[in-house]
Image 1 (tube, rainbow, N blue to C red):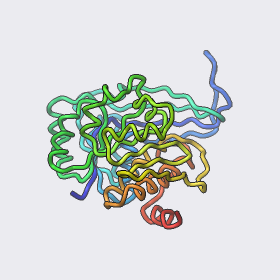
Image 2 (image 1 turned 60 degrees about the vertical axis):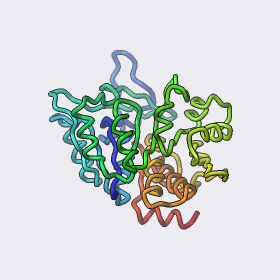
Image 3 (image 1 turned 90 degrees about the horizontal axis):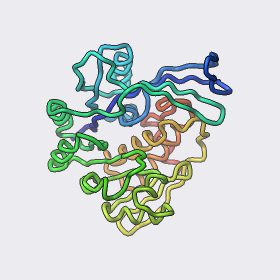
Image 4 (image 1 turned 60 degrees about the horizontal axis):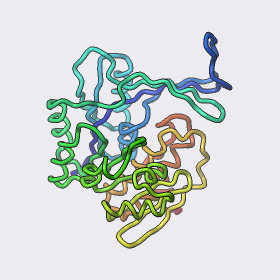
Length: 300
């Protein structure tokens, strides 16, 4: 069990920076800076783990288009092994044009958001994930594979993202199956129906002995058995763009799980990787390698 696996759609971001405003209908504006990057989500977490020296594998959909070729190259550069689940002739990725404004940002996205696996895709994912120490969980059609992996001893880490209808009832089978769940403040309040993050954390004890609730730049709440604690954010990191911060946090958190650290250490690793992510524009521009992660950790 020497690797981490996951299945999810690949996202590519076209980042336009330096606009003072959005263009009106019929207008054309020129930006001051542009970059093409892999976007956030499960692939970004696996890439950050690859940068920390952990072998990672992703089951995803890739085509023959130039965006898919770009994604393949980036996976390879960052230590992630991609296994393709797609055999069609269209562009199977999510492609987002992100317009970065001085105080906000807006997005235009092509794609269907997530993968809807058939039986062949489920079998393919299981074959690459079998034997993983940790598997990332997402909502959707891969639940049968998660069940098999859990029976075989793989640790399951659930990350849901925002949903207007999220609740314990709706996500019950995922929450019962997962070993860890890492909601942010807004998600934790919504899914638990509480009005503050501490109550939300204790409400999650219904499913988890070890609870994690991210409270944005402030840090992260943890409950380990009967021990409630708070790990503050890293003051040294200046927020430039929060895109990908949650994905990066998850990478640091799973780094700790992979090496069997206590929950508090796992959260502190997550605060470091998540904090570093906001120091540059894009989901994967700001990051630490393993040496830098351990150096930051030694100062906490």
